[in-house]
Length: 483
Ligand code: GLC
Image (cartoon, rainbow, N blue to C red):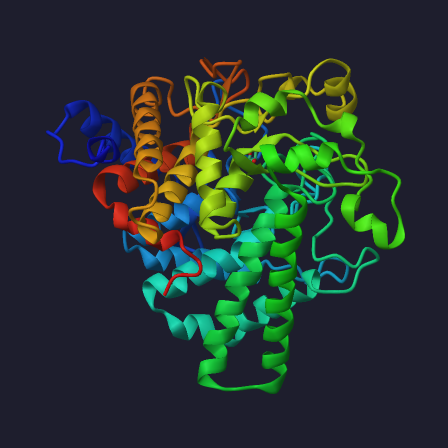
């Protein structure tokens, strides 16, 4: 058992294959960095597109979500100046329009000396991106804690930015629930995929965002107490608490909870209604869930809406729920068990699949608007994104650090799974020019419309390498609740 749990941790002989891949990734990564006002600010989304020049899409812009792994990597490397500049430019672009006040842009770029920001409306399909805004306080807090730049954290502009963002989130709504309602396409999945309402990734990010805002406000409180800030803190903490309770109650499923769900009464109202708050009919529970959950697996479902829960598994939302400690330690282990059990689907030839299962047939036609890019097993619709694996690696390593000596066998298997994923990426990504995503049920084919030299593929691999080979202890950087 001990041998198993140590797999992948011991010292290794230097391998030129590894060194070559890491060196190549480092070089490509430097090429993705661009400047704003003469100072490096972050990375463009991708360096190239096989379709050739004149590629009209906006991959030459600095996307906030694509820069999450970039900023974390830069923090690990001690390149704090770039991260601070990035945070400052984002703050400068925080919307002041009266209908979107407080929102951060999806992406930005400098053109002829002018900063040009996109809040989603300039993107394909004129979408509303929400995740960028929720990521900003998380990155800001992780920067302040790692760099110890408390002056920045307590500065008026940061504290003002936090309050503007909180105004956008913490307000009464018709539903009276702690979740944030969003339209389709509000996060990494930014094409129609029936992920409107309260999709997991947004709600988990909201939890991370509110927790980070609290940490930043606590910092300001330490310097100078204010009754008003105290009230904001109380409200934020209460909201965070209610949100977590809501998600654990309505999104967490295991084999046991599904069996309870199947036998619940329907058409309940008033006091009785608590047993089936969303009036979900048992027929809605998909049969594939039986094998997917097996005996002791568990995960957060993709969405909860009246009568229509979304049982799809979303890798990023679940990994973030571990990292942000939204789910408890035993739930985290149930999630690792589930990933191990379904490795053929989730990892396959290129870890990891973005969501499972894909929408097919009429459902695909209806829900995606016949989107050819999101054909079943492609792109967002069950495609494989190498940039997602490091999040899971961070979750596993952080779990090991927080709860050492718990279920050594399981954690050893989880480590071995990451090792395998690492080798799969190492062997394929340099050859496949760090493609954006991979298609097909086994994730073997390079995405039909994938960009190459995609930044978060490159930097995701570098983070994975750092966490598995260089400094596993650095997983603590990702812990928003840590000291
Ligand atoms: C695509 C992806 C989105 C990403 C962007 C830039 O639009 O769907 O998640 O941020 O490309 O890489």
